[in-house]
Image 1 (tube, rainbow, N blue to C red):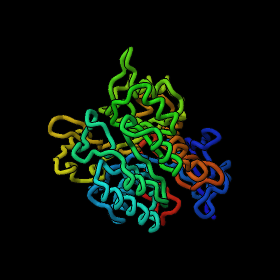
Image 2 (image 1 turned 60 degrees about the vertical axis):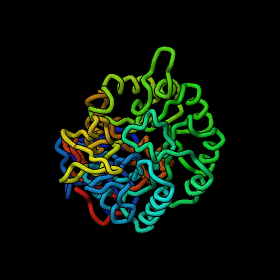
Image 3 (image 1 turned 90 degrees about the horizontal axis):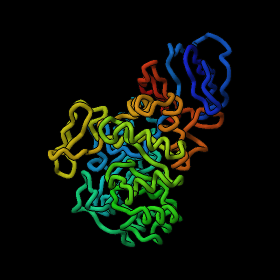
Length: 379
């Protein structure tokens, strides 16, 4: 049993923000959270914070590794370690539209990583290839295809972690969405031209997520609300937001905050291999991506994921959404845990949950990350 004493700051627990706290850990779980009982080994936060470990459902790469190029345990571990430095204690490595054989290999690689107890790996996000070419973004439309029985079988096979699948809802029969959901797949809508009516029908069928709200979908119009309008109007789906100063303007972020149930908003990074890497530029599907000033772009100016880490995303959310630190941390931890069905073990500082947390300085920069299953603390 270990005790961690935090003073002179803020500890964002499930029951509210405390000015200090003693967290007792037994094994990989929080056994108790209470008042600080002594000054021995107390950690002075100096106005900083302790918040739940961040959970990122869209991580294309990190530490110089792009998941598409490294479908192996070592590559996945490198990505996870790179993001742990910035407060991410759980993540879904994300595959950018690939061929069926590479999708199968990616799913198997994540199973192997979880079996090898790579800290922080809780599943996979397969983004595409069932997307709308009109909203391809940086995805290669040559890889786009419809779902067939072979791919459905691969996606619905029992897995060690969560399986999230981004599709354009208009390209998938409602019966197939229901079938995927019944098998445990978390179906999300994105890179789509879906009408309002098509989006609502997909929600009815069990589609439960929206991949990077506003991006890779038509702008709302007064008579054509589309997927974005349906998401603002319907309380059911969880919505990912990329808050990096490039993907979405701050007023549109605040509009989502006002229109949607707060607990259904999640921070995502859409991070590329540049996060935590010395050499920032990278190649995706044979195309050079330039990374400068925190922005990833293709030669024609198309955004190509992000150079965003979750620590910066939380700080940006406080600034651009004008919300408190604990609410921003909930968007990075509590809400994605609920979306993934992992609230029983992650996402909050509460008795019985995993002892995963992030220590932030007064400027909200992560200075220490604790992952309960790891033998080390990333800093």
